[in-house]
Length: 267
Image 1 (cartoon, helix red, strand yellow):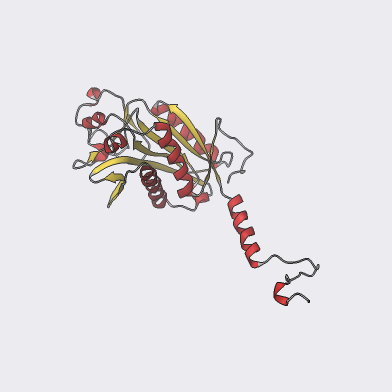
Image 2: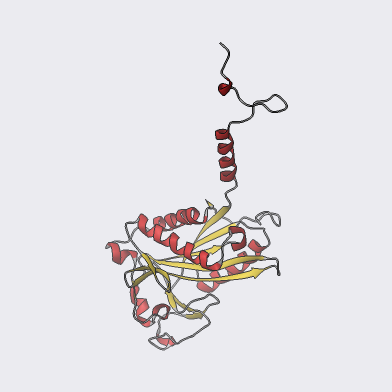
């Protein structure tokens, strides 16, 4: 019995069977999956704040030139207080020389905060133009990465209207301060530096010397305080990198060295 016409594939002018609609959709899906941009992840360990800032500036220039993929730096800082250029010193509870740690004026946005051991720092070096994001959406994405990461450890958190960062009730568990620069002239890339800080098991006593983020009626908390015991720092770093890939739709690749490529390879 001849096959019914519904069982026969449409054929092109060459006589070859054309793919079905289902196969075509699958092919497009595979092509999209293959085109997911790469984001390299680097665990730097404990790094001085000034050294990390210099590295970010260098990598931002290389990223803008298209010689580096989007990059996520994960690290800790030795004890340091940092503040944006506005209101320098206005949110100190004690004189700077009595803080017990250096006070650094940074080129990021935001007010004063503390960084130290037990706090996970993430510095994304990404091209916002290539990612199709504006600055506000970028910050919202960072907040979503943090919320998802905390949820992976059984901590429910959220946002506060008019305030950046991630909160549990009236206490901030993660701070965000970013800088976005156009590099390479008028047609250049908008590349991010600085980023986010998640309190894992940091000593919260350091925050008592300042008005954190310039918000006098709010407190700070940590994963250790919320859970009773802190999860392994490496596990938090791994989960944050994975959630970053999910939210920003990047293929996260853990790397040892900084990848350099011919100019414009990653534009």
